[in-house]
Image 1 (cartoon, helix red, strand yellow):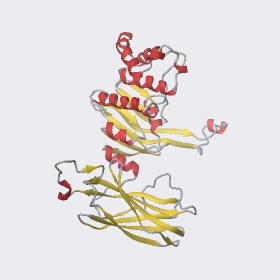
Image 2 (cartoon, helix red, strand yellow; image 1 turned 90 degrees about the vertical axis):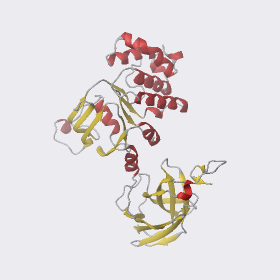
Image 3 (cartoon, helix red, strand yellow; image 1 turned 180 degrees about the vertical axis):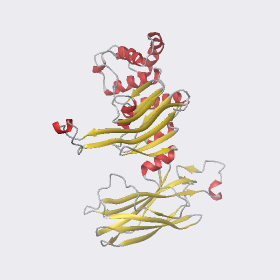
Image 4 (cartoon, one colour; image 1 turned 45 degrees about the vertical axis):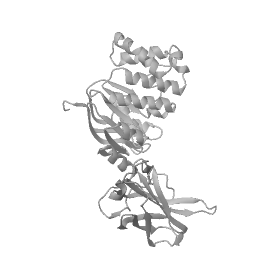
Length: 386
């Protein structure tokens, strides 16, 4: 490990067994039901980093954190840690149910190697932050899930540790407490000797808090680097300077239930000051009726600036269809936008059913016309130019 590293993972693998375990499994001769939750994983984290960890459900994020926290052991590979770890992986992790909230504070501090005098200095601050003072001398087995996470978070962020691990810690609790937690994490981020590993499906908090981000897919580290690029990778976004791009092999969102139609290519046909013409190719895998294309332009915060629909049409199996769409960009403010293409059909009840959805070419709107200012009122209202 380098001098400024607090965590290094080398060739890490974690194998689990699916289903029940038989005598044959115990003798080590049956590997048909084995699967690797973490595969050949390598990672190095430096002091002071806030590392975001994102990926689909079942990608291996929580397994990785449990390996780092030594809750479970690796099948192969090495994990090198320089410092003390405080983990908040699940509601109430590390709490003894029969002990009171106050007693659990001292228990957690002792596990971290803190002296009683050091915990005494922090205990009142922890209780105030948790907002559980009225129940602090009650056994935690009687706490609600919200009280559990309030106290667990307060303990994790206030007691001394070099590496703080958090897995979906803001998914429980009210909005005000979540904001309080975010502010506390920001405060901790100013400590260059403290490192945070942060797992969340809330990409907005990942973007706001993290200095670096990795994407895990089926146990494999798919991306490691800039936070925005990591989110683009996770969302299946493709950023390019080319006017035409192949989308046939791009990852589709998991909620799509049908594969009747697949978008294969997208291109800029033409662009000028006030408009944009897009061309889309898609392949018909199964004959469809009442098919349309929806194009949405969204900013980097996933707020949609505009959307438009084509006329409905029908297509036969095996056909390759090409459509052009004109988008009026005159009323959209300067900025970096994603273009989301969706092919949909209408069911018998008049509802839209999405057949394919993909984030394709990005667009950047930047011209002198948009840089004018108004004397009386700001010219922006969301993504609309007034």
